[in-house]
Length: 181
Ligand code: K1U
Ligand code: ZN
Image (cartoon, rainbow, N blue to C red; front, side, top):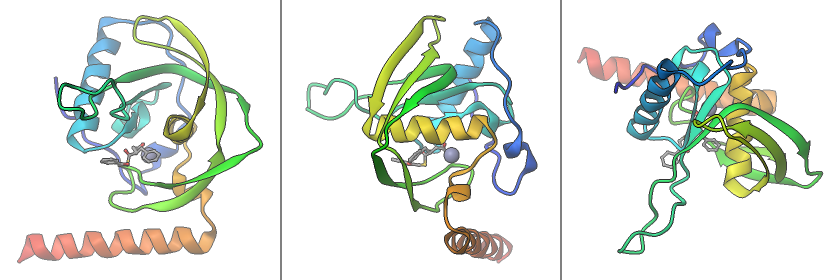
């Protein structure tokens, strides 16, 4: 297993539209394992294959909403989505303060449909169809955007997007200054 480098804005590779996955293979299984290791190390709750420079329609997620362990704490609940599609979106919207591993340490409120009906395959190539809500719906929409070359900052007003990118630039400059000192 390996931790993969995560592409960051403004890398043009984040803007590619990803291609469908044809079949489950050993190589795909190895990529899924690497993506989970990368996501947990970041840390994050989701990761799309284009973020690690694999422009295919695959994403992984873990909202740590598994059954509580003996101490009553949340446990890992890894989920794999291959070729995910959104079939229906609710008219009702919800707002979540989203982050993105490709826009490091920047958070902003994004409005999206509160519920979606989605279809996807898992790592056993089993087909699923379900209505999702809450953070699962928000995170799936965020990750599916990555498969279409869209970032959460594209869904902000121009003013808010510029503020986020300016903050990121400042943070990068400070990190470079500290590294040079
Ligand atoms: O796609 C990504 O870049 C991952 C992103 C997923 C996401 C977060 C919030 C709303 C929608 C989608 C992240 O995981 S950002 C980091 C984050 O949210 C987090 C990190 C540590 C603990 C808990 C959350
Ligand atoms: Zn993201």
